[in-house]
Image (cartoon, rainbow, N blue to C red; front, side, top):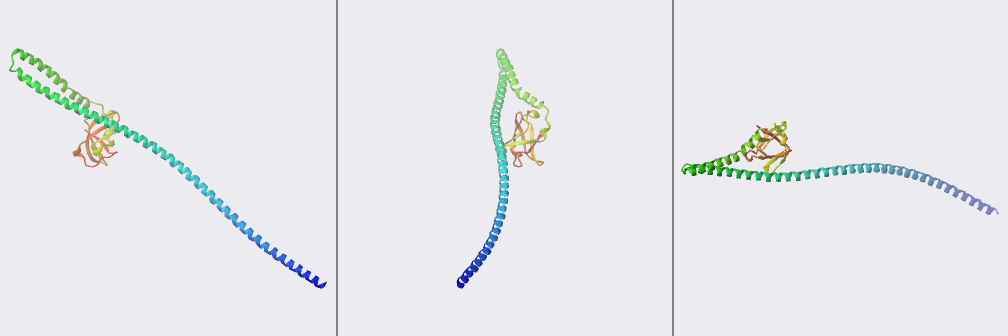
Length: 250
């Protein structure tokens, strides 16, 4: 009986010791779990902060991308308008070249007609000096007709020249007009001057940059808002470009 009691006491002591050990071990594990939970909470807070910052940066990038896309659209619109303007200018230049070539051809034909009339008039006068009275009278009528025709033809050029000389008063812009476009191989330039500025075909302009004269030009065609000037090849001292200054030469 005593032995049984002793055994039971021993078992009770062992159970008590085991319970104490497990209680201590559970306490330590609980403390470790609390520390791990606190660490994970801190880490989660840090991750949330980083996530918020990333979202803010992402929103800023999206806003910048939207602004860039808008600017790109505006640039494309301006580029399209500029290309359309260049096409229109190219067409007008081609039309002006055609008109200029036609004008030169007309002037050549007019000069040839004048020369032919002069030769015919001289021959008629010579023939009138050796003919009989009837032929002389006929030659006189022919001479009068030829002189009338010659006067009409020769009167075209002086009239046009007089109109140019007594045209509108030139504006202040003729002292420093911009070159809007330069032709191939510096053959001609388009100036930002028009009929309202009082210029006319035949007017001369010096083309310069930073005060240095680069070339001399002569107006060949004038429109409402621009004029075409032909460059004198022998006067070129440097490559011309848009933005150069054209100054009227009296």
